[in-house]
Image (tube, rainbow, N blue to C red; front, side):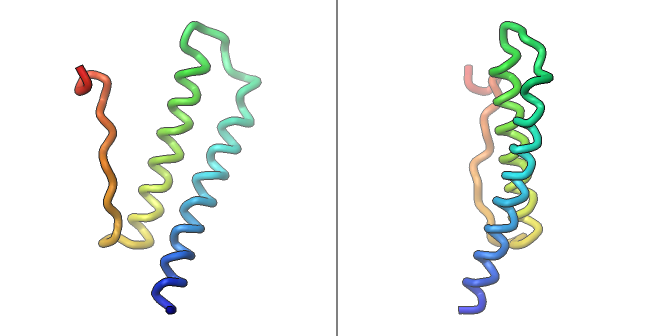
Length: 78
């Protein structure tokens, strides 16, 4: 049971750190310059930043226990 509790702590801490990052990013929405793709780019960047935070924190907490799928770059999709 202790292993499960440790794993839950790793997950909770990673999610909390990613959430704090998103709250900080979205707190800056009012400073966003209006442009054709401004809002979409901002949201995409915030999403990628939160995802990277989760991956980094989970790798630190469980270096041998994370499996994820790499996002395709736009150039790879075509």
